[in-house]
Amino acid sequence: MAKVLYIEASPRKERSASIEVANNFLNAYRAAHPDDTVETLDLWATDLPRFDQSTLDAKYAILHGQPHTPGQKAAWEAVERIAAQFNSADKYVFSLPMWNFGVPYILKHYIDVLLQPGLTFSFTPEEGYKGLVTGKPAVVIYAQGGQYPKGTPWEN
Image (cartoon, rainbow, N blue to C red; front, side, top):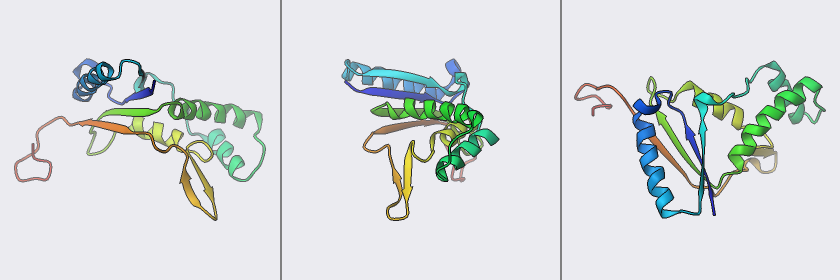
């Protein structure tokens, strides 16, 4: 039995093409893998921790082998909760719209919180950077809105 983490990054909900496609994909997945579980992480309904001064200081305390202050400890625990949820999954499904030719800022925020030393990657001078979340398949479902002129690289 595998755990799938479905990360939803569109605020449009029932009007979202990426969510509609993701729901169809997940329904087919559930039918093919009835013993697996799917956990939904709606980034717009999640209180993501701010990567503020306390969180940044907590990160650098870890990097420099220093203990956390109480404020840093509380800030870092919020980051650890996000990483623990992500790391606990066996598979990932991301659904997101294209915003201004990029990803929604809420997904960027999530990634910035998630990618932390000791939680999702490590670093040593001998090995360099090393991913700690490996061998887990991921599906990314993108959708775009609007029309793009003929002859442009974004032509529909």
